[in-house]
Length: 458
Image (cartoon, one colour):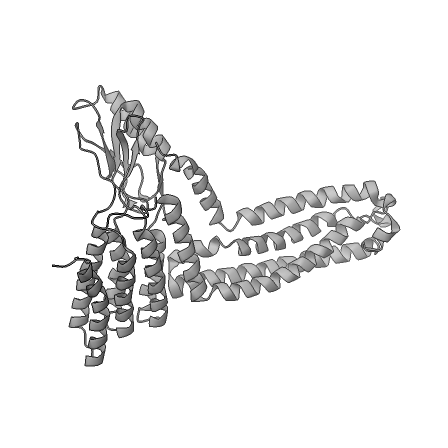
């Protein structure tokens, strides 16, 4: 069996942490609290042994001055943190209402925002923790001013000021639609390269999608979903081990990103030998292990879902074409990224993933979204909602031409030709002048010429 799934659990955990705002700030608070406790103790040990050349650069004020500085730092940093959080929330609201609610995962996974919040909260926590160690003679204790600790608080404050400026510049860049589309495209491409196998360098252009489901040899038993939601990922190793243990074939009919309902079939199993399993307990155990290997969540993630990025880009294009937004330029930009992502998908094997045992027998079959389905996801809604805009329709023609030139398999090209026919019918039904119709015909000819040259049409 391929070891592709060995990192699946780690990838899922990494994605879960990466897309949350709280982990890095929490780590920053913990580290700052520990430093605020330990550094004053270190100050006590070496305070009298520091060389004079070094102490000239450390905080030189008394206990009252140290308390004033730390109080000012703590008060100002919590205010700045509140401002930063407010700006982040406003950005999330803008992304949700203006572009797509499915872009929120992209914003919440922004490492720069997480690090900025960690820096601000950490500085606040550190200053507050060090403040408790400053002592004056009025406290009926020995005078103590942690020079190194207070100096570090000052340095962290300066760093936070620089960080605030960089954060504002970063936020101004990230709310641009070009940056959002680029981030989604980049994440989607990373998922494709991680999950899918590339096609051979010189595939047979007459071949279809690689991979096929094995013949059913025994009585088929459905596997029912244990919860309602989206299929987030499949633990391939656990599925394979369960299939080998039960001497069975396991087929998961739903690809990651698909929705399922508790109690509805998500896959099926059958014995490799004979018409049925030896006993009901063996079948029950197999079904239990299969359900445990299927992870269900309330939202789609990029762990194994190769269609998520495509859906996000399509959502941006569709939202831009809505009457409330009416921004066809953004839709055209999104279609450009969709063209590039479809080209990446076309160069990868979208056929069923087959996990084989040492005897080359198929044990597990994992379905992937076919290319024609992904193409429909990218084109269907923009074609419908942009049916009255000649620029959007023209970009759709260009998209089909671009993807056709890079699609290496016959079934991929047939899907593109089918979409071309549907797009031409949409244009024929629209209210366009002669110049616009002539442009549509010229763009369609780019695809038709390539098809005829390769014998794709009779």
